[in-house]
Structures are given as structure tokens and as C-alpha cells.
Length: 425
Ligand SMILES: *Cc1c(COP(=O)(O)O)cnc(C)c1O
Image (cartoon, rainbow, N blue to C red; front, top):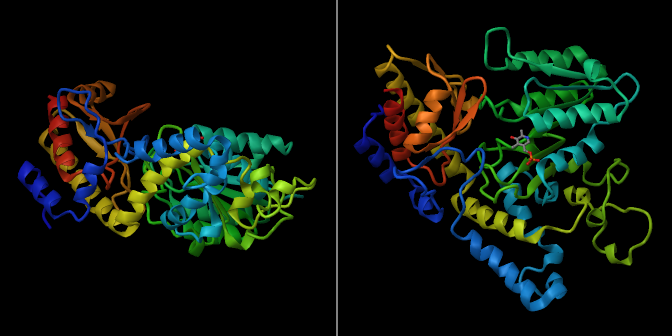
């Protein structure tokens, strides 16, 4: 369908949107004179209107029952995480036993790497992406050092080719084959946080396994955004956070995935805590760690119930909408936003060019578009903020925006274009 950069057209698209009723299920920021365009769901998702009630329910149970809430609360805290498992598993394309929600993202990445980065003999190397999210870079670096190895030789970063923004996927696959039996693990962001590039996780997993390495992904920018199939793809492990596309409160709980083939591997080394202990006999408090079957066996601590309640509020909305419908709107709305930006760029070409560095191919991206504003700079971003756009600026010159299918509208995309036009003036 030919798009038009007009208010009427965008409203027409919203009218036909099967998910249109979800926008009203979220609080929208209201701190600005202009109507805010919130395009940072990839950084902190908006608050579902139901979140408060979900949390209040657990506060009430705490008030009423004290410690007995572990068993007497309507959703007993003892097994609270189990209420989230199936819904989280659906979002990442996993079986329930492969997923657990607990801790925070970087913690979970470390816990998983303790089990799945097991350098031995000459098989010591990790392949990751260059300019990974800083927390991932630090986590990888410290894992290598933890094993007494050398980051110069054992951490291999795949960078975009000279003069390019995106990583050529062939370069990852070729490097995996080349490192071969020296490769211990591949760990990459499923969607690159900076460019929005989506990697073929299936292919990368196959390539890693072909040379005998384990393969894991950081899905911070993929969970709730991309239609994932972690079980089918055979990925060994993955972790993601609940607060970006999954709208589950600032610093909210994280999810982790361990493939079913590792579900019953008590011999896999891990950093253990009591909540990973076989729940049938946990309270006999015997010495000697006996891990639970599946991903639950990587839990350390009893669940932070208030954060879990916030996550459950959002997971229920995802469940209602379904990732298929979310994915369809994501592609259509992102394409419309891309059209609007290109239209504004064309109309202002004497002043600046807006280059979208995110892949054009729908199969290679999710909801995020990263824009380089040639001939402008931070000043343009600051002006956009003054207009009412909540977006994200990354040095040296990238504006990242992400329309979230559950609460953003086509009209937001149109409005963004108008604010952008005003900001360029
Ligand atoms: C957001 C993000 C993080 C943040 O980690 P926390 O432990 O939740 O603070 C880490 N890695 C990536 C790739 C991210 O996008």
C-alpha cells in the first residue's frame, strides 16, 4: 500500500490496527506541553495501567499474611515465578521448562556463562560483536579473565567492515569456522542495541555447534520485539531484561533460557543458590547442591515478588495481544515510520540528510530505527526533545527510536515527522 505522510493517512492506519485498543492500557508520559511521542520502549517500556494493581495485591498479601504469604497469598510467593514462566516462554519461543524469570540481566548473563563458557585445552575463545552494549562487553571481558585467559587473544570481536555501520553476517559465520576447534562460545546481542540490526540466530547457532562451541544470545533488544524461536533454533542459552520492550518497571526482573538438551545436566558447573535446588526437597536443607530440572536450576534467590508482579502485568498484555499480531504491527509501523523519515529527509535535503543505518530488510530488524543526521548533530536531537519526542541519543551521532507495537500508533509516527520537520527548521 502506498504510504502518505499525512495526519489523515496515519489516523486511517490506526483505525484499521487490530491492536489499537492496547494503547489505552498504558500510561502515556504527560510532562510536556506538546503531545509526547514516546519512542524509547527499547530503553524503558511504558507502564501498563494494571501494574499498580498487580503490585498492590502482593503488598496487601504481605500486610495480611506476613511471611505466611509464601503459601497463603492467592499467588503463593513460594512459587510466584511459576506464574510467569509459560507466558515468558511463549514470547521467546521456548518450552516452559527452558525459561525462568529471576535476577537482573547482567547477573543472568554471568550465571549462564559460568555454565556455558568452559574453556578447556586450546578451546578457549569467545566470538562476540564489536561495540557490544557496555555491560555485555564488561561481562565477557571479566569471564575471560576469571578463567585466567587473555582478552587480547581469547575475545574475538566482529566489527562492521571499513566504512560500514552494520556487521556483515558472513563475517561472523566465517570467523566461527576459521576459529574452529579453538572456539569455546559465541555470545552476541540478538538485536544490536546501537544499529537495530537483527542477526540470524538460527544460522549462527548452527555454525557455532558445527565447530563444537556453545552459542548464547543477549536478547535485551529482542525479547518482546522479535518473533523468537529459541527452542527450534537450538540456542544453548539466552538472557533478556523485562524493562525494555517488556514494560516491566525500571530495573525490573530478567528472563533466562537454557535449552532443553541441558535441562537435566546436574554436572554442568554453575554458581548455585537455594532457589535452584530441587524444590521437592529444598527445605530439608541437606548439604550438597541438587539442581532443579531445567532453567529453574539456575535461580539463586527467592523471587523479588514486587518486580515479578510488575512483569506479570505486562506479560498478561503480551499474552492477550500475541507475538504474531505484535510482530505484524511492528513491521508495518516501522516501515511507515521509515517512510515518514525519508519523506522529511527528502523535503529538507538542502539542510541535512537523515540516513537510517538500520537494515532496510524487514527480516533483519525489529522495531528500532537508528538515524544518522548528516549535517546536524546533537543540536537536532536536543531540539526534537524540546518538541516532545522522547528518543535516545548515542555518541557520536546516532538517534535511536523504536515504535512499540502495543502502545505506539501510526499517528505517533506522523507526529514524529512533524516534530522532526520543526526541529530541522
Ligand atoms: C539494556 C541492556 C543491558 C542492561 O543490563 P542490566 O543488567 O539490566 O542493567 C545489558 N545488555 C544489553 C545488550 C542491553 O541492551
